[in-house]
Length: 306
Ligand code: MBD
Ligand code: FE
Image (cartoon, rainbow, N blue to C red; front, side, top):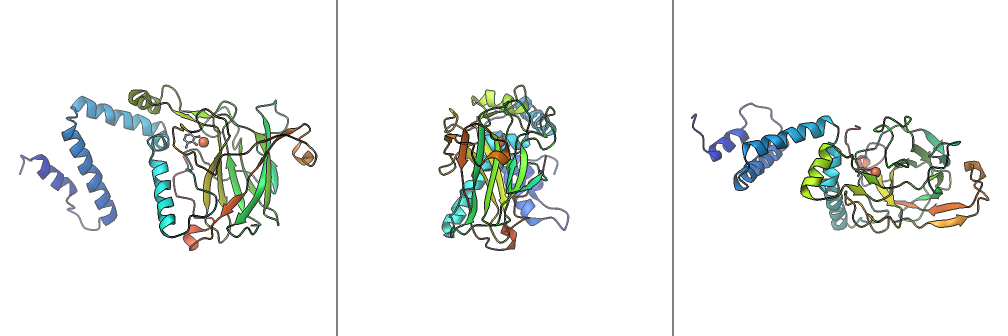
């Protein structure tokens, strides 16, 4: 039995020779290994190519960039498309569209009621001042009090706190609880887009396959409320040249912001706004949860928190 053909080898790799395996893991791993064996054979992948790939993968993972590659190769959006398709079949594709979480969410941001600054008071101007505001409502238009909106976005250099050692903990990350009328509002600045780190495993692959690694300007949200289906989404700042060419494929109709430039500061004093600013109205429309597993707070799609 020491001389194996490719087929015999694959059979033995797939064969479980201990009890108590996990059937789902067995099935998935057998399929993926089999597909890779076939790719190696059909593409005549040479040992140096194979080991270069393994080396790339270990550098990618030890550098914390696995979630960047899944987004850039379309896997994150694929999972969303499949959830949308399942919703469509179940007749429940209402409300604010979902959009990928991305690899840069951190739980536990500072929590405020109704309103907050997401940027810091007393800093130099970091971009166009904006106040985003609106309500969380259910699919019948009823306001949702006590919803928790997690918001996070990049700084003026396109970098996210926690991953960027130059920023304070939770910089540009906040949570806001909606008031009795379901309202929220926050002040920040319109962020720029994001680009994958240069000289990294991710950029290596992207230059080799001839793709850019840019995301258009966007803001992330995770909205959680009792009895409602947890919503992970992103909104885009209009006018960005990458808006229809996002490296992570996350742009969606219904998620492009409308900017109300030159809004009067009157009524926004509590956010420290003193001059005309850009108002950004946006309501989050949340579906009812089909069951407990879809509702707050455990329904965020489980992924490790970097
Ligand atoms: C981001 O800011 C992001 O949102 C995604 C999905 C991937 C990389 C950087
Ligand atoms: Fe992002």
